[in-house]
Image (cartoon, rainbow, N blue to C red; front, side, top):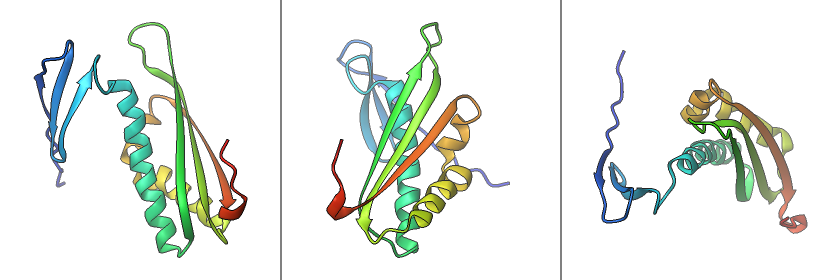
Length: 141
């Protein structure tokens, strides 16, 4: 079985308790004075699934104008402060959107394609919601 290898290296930065993480896409600061690691888990989930959903909807020839993803993670108070639950909400805005196409795209992402979701679902309860809006009717909350 062929395995893809990903490598990230860390170096302590000038900022207290913060590291420079070198990835294949560039450098980011991670730690107490930069991007917080547990927030980056949620960023990874939204980014992974969001790319899937937009690609699938494009293949389904849906007229998507915007996709918004809201994620709320609830962490326990005791250490390690892992997420006990995650709420993942997709808001898809477009023209003549098919609700079924959006449901199918989200289902395919979370059941088949999104690696981050596949790993997280083994450890935490993830509640998935969606709203589909016509562009002319959308009112941000």
